[in-house]
Length: 498
Image (cartoon, rainbow, N blue to C red; front, side):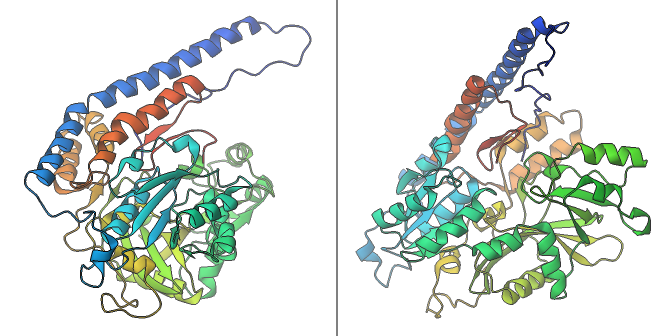
C-alpha cells in the first residue's frame, strides 16, 4: 500500500533536551536541526504534490472519456437516478426506498460498498471523521449525502451515530472500520440496534477476533489450523523462551494494531542471545500493551474478505497476499473457504470478517495467522457483482431474487484490481529492471483501477488532485512526516497514526 518514499527517523521530532543545568555542548544547534527537518519534510511533500500533478493529463482524459461514454454514447448506467416508486417489484432494485449509512468514507472499500448498494437502489449516506472530510469519495454519484462524525474514541461517537440514523431514516449501518474503530462500532451497536440493522460483530466477538492470541486458541479449540502463538506481556518472556525445542522460528506482533511495526517480520531468536535481548528491549511490550510470539511459517499467504449474517457465510473472496497489499486477484481456494465457513458457523459470527492464512511449504497445511473484524480491501473484487447488497442486507427468509443461503463470490468476469499510482511508482522505481516493468504494465492492462468507474469518475480525479494533495499540504503545516502515501485507504501512514 505504499509509495516507497520513506521518512527519515525523527523527522517530525526535535532533539532530546538535557536535564543538566549547564548548557550541553551543541545545544544551540537544536533550532537549526529542527528547521532543517521541517524544510526537508516540506520539500518531500511538495515534490510528491508536483509528481501527482504530472498525472493530470491521464486523469482528465479518463474523466472526459467517461463523460463521453455516459452522455454521448448513452451506455447503460447502473447508478441511474430513478424514483423509488418506479422500482416497485419490477426494476430489479431490491432495496429501493431503503437507506444505508457507511463509515470509513476515506477508504476505497467504503466507495466500493457505496457503489454496490447504490446499484441495488439504496440511498447512501457516507460518513468520516473531520480530518478526512476532504475525501474524494464524497463526490461520488453513489453518495447521496456526506456527513462527519466524531473520532470513534470520542465519548459522543455513539450518540452522533444514533442522531444520524434517526435524522436520515437509516435502515442499515455498515461500518467500514479503521482498526481503532472496530470495538467502538461494536459498542455503538448496542444503541443502534433499536433503530437500524448493524452489520458488525458484538463487542465480545470483536475482542476475540482482533486478538491474535485468542483467535489462535479459538481456532485450535474447534480443530482448525492456527499458528502456534504465545501471549507476551513482558520482554523477559521472549528472552527466556525455549526456542531450541522449536522447529520453526518465531516473530513478534503487537496485539494492538501498529501501522508501522505490523510489517516487521524479524525472525526470533536472533543469532545471539544479546541480539535477541536488544531487539525485544526496543519494543513497547507491557501488560497493558500485550504482544504475541507467533510461529513464523514460510509458505503461500492468502487474505480473505467474508460477510456473515447470523452464522451464515453470505459473501466471500480469497486473494493471494503480500506485505503491501495493493493488488487483488481472486483465487479459488476451497480449503480456505471451508475453514472460514466452519469458523463463522461455530461462533455464529455476524458482520464483516477478514482472515489472513498461510499454506506451509513444508507440510502443505493451512494455518490462520490473524483476523481483522472489519471490511477488507479485497471487497473491490466485487466491482461488477450485482448481488453484493443482497448478501449484506438480505433478511433471514429466502426471496425470489436471491436465496440468503447462497454464498456470493467474485464473478468470473471480474478484473483484478489495483491502484494506478502504486503501479506507476513500481514502474518508475524499476526502470532498470525491464522484467518488473513489463509485469506492472500487464497488471494495468489486464486489471481495473479500484477507484475508477466509467459511470462514476469523479472520485478517481479528486483522489489524485484534491484528497491526497490536501493531506500533503496539511503535513507541510503540521510537520508530522509520513512513512508512505496510501491511496487505497486514503491517508498518509504516519508514526503514531491509526
